[in-house]
Length: 147
Image 1 (cartoon, rainbow, N blue to C red):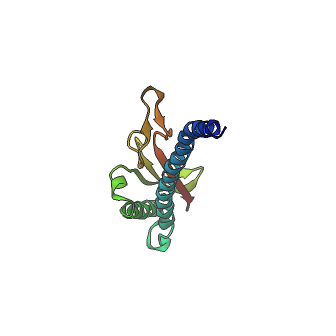
Image 2: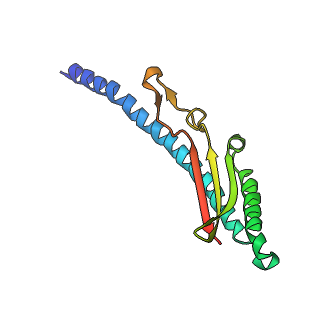
Image 3: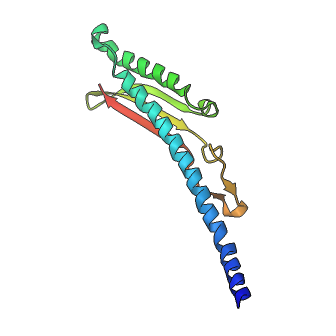
């Protein structure tokens, strides 16, 4: 009687173990991906915030937009250097100002293109079944603030 139960337990283990490992692996990969996006979003947020600290009394009204964009862009480039070295060359984007319904807005954006083909943490390829876990094509973030 005992040997029959051992066989059933072994069969259940063989069937469930790959599913549990796949779930843990996917959770790890998604955790790394979400943390990477959080770090990139933090860089964009901090760059926009720094653009708001321009002393307006030091510039003519027509030059404030350019000064805000320049300060935000300089901060963005500086903060990108704090990210892991493997990401720096891949990140695209910058800061600019725009007018939306008469309100001046500074906007910073960053994109990690081709994320699916060159991810931070590797996925598993199963040939015609595709890759696991499924990842986004690119990581894109944006931050805006009116000034």
